[in-house]
Image (spheres, rainbow, N blue to C red):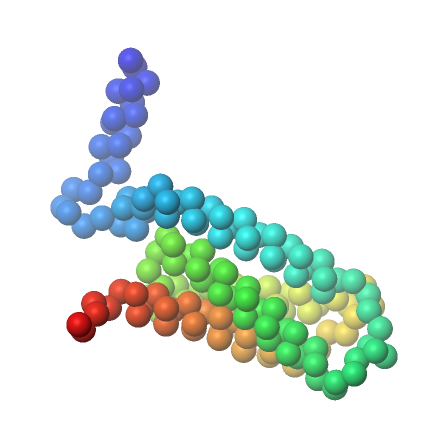
Length: 155
């Protein structure tokens, strides 16, 4: 009985006082489950991406010059999309939130490039540029989708 009282007190502390609910307080169980699922996907993707960029490779087999930039662009585009989706399930994608997401990915991209040196790979600033452009497209796409879902339809 005592634990039930503490649960209801906890619920009262998180209930909206003036009718303005935050995203966390209004989150449905389905939304929380989706956020967890996206979080797991994001974590797995980020780990696989990190491991893939830290395996020593030969550049002799590169058939198309600059193809690695496309791989960087797409890889970080997916990372930007997943990270911004995960964040958007908790907070609105305001300009400030988008900047934080892009800054996080940008910093990771720099660290990722620097950590490739010890495994015999090149630290190429143009790879980081491709990373940032891809991340910007992924985050931008998520922000556009998020905003278009918030607008009332004009029908």
